[in-house]
Amino acid sequence: MEKDRDHELLAHFWSLHAAVIKRDGLEDRMRAGTHEQDMLDRSLAASERVLQARSALYRHLIGNGWTPPPALVRDLVYDEIVLAETDGALHG
Image (cartoon, rainbow, N blue to C red; front, top):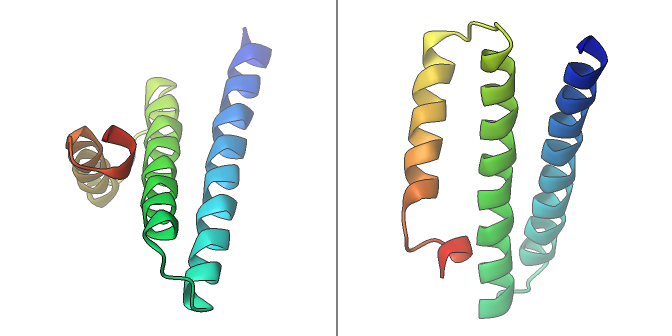
């Protein structure tokens, strides 16, 4: 059981890591002068994936007994409200 939780935790960390790398790469390209609508949409979607991955990691940690500081809880709730909006890049 402990091993399964460790694997889940690592999967959440790697998911967040991959999302951040992807988002950062797109932001670097935009800073270099690429401002096409497709690039902007992809960057927004990548940012939303970072929020999703970070939220999933925090929820996993909380579900396994971690008590986050109040400021992080407020940020988590805000992130999840943003992700629930229907006008983001991932939502259409």
